[in-house]
Length: 244
Image (cartoon, rainbow, N blue to C red; front, top):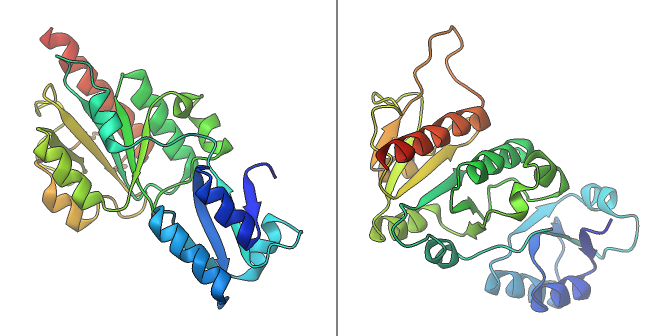
């Protein structure tokens, strides 16, 4: 596979050379000085490490992986500062923050909608987010090669930073009393989309400035997260077009 690096020293060298590492998988129970060095490098470079059974590593490669396999991202990640500085002067920023979206197809579909409405960037978590892999890029119709994506260690700290920059944080949740059509989304806005199973976490929800729901008429109470994101993002675009 072209998107993996395996072996302790090769993975350390890949990280130190600046390659965009998606995640490092380490065999459960593995230890040793070189492995400790790897974990220290990962911590310094904010690369997520996950301990897994050796069977998973063996499925990733049949070669001598020494208990370590890293997946390499096909895109170059951006910093949050790069996304903010990329918003044209006089234009209201629009950022999509994904709180524990783990399905790569949902991730890709949301990225596609975000790029189509001219969103300035996506923000995901280092630990609990779908990887940017070939399937995600295919689902995004190539949008993940265009729209900047930032990975952050703390969603809460990122929201605080965005609020300090003048962004309102709008949480998408079916439990909201206000509909997305009644909210003012013309100002700089961060749209927060939550996990496929549990939605936005309580800690993140408490930090949001407003909550918005899509009014539903049928017997099914909610949309798939990528469909919901599309509805909300195109409402943002509609409001901003009408304001001009």
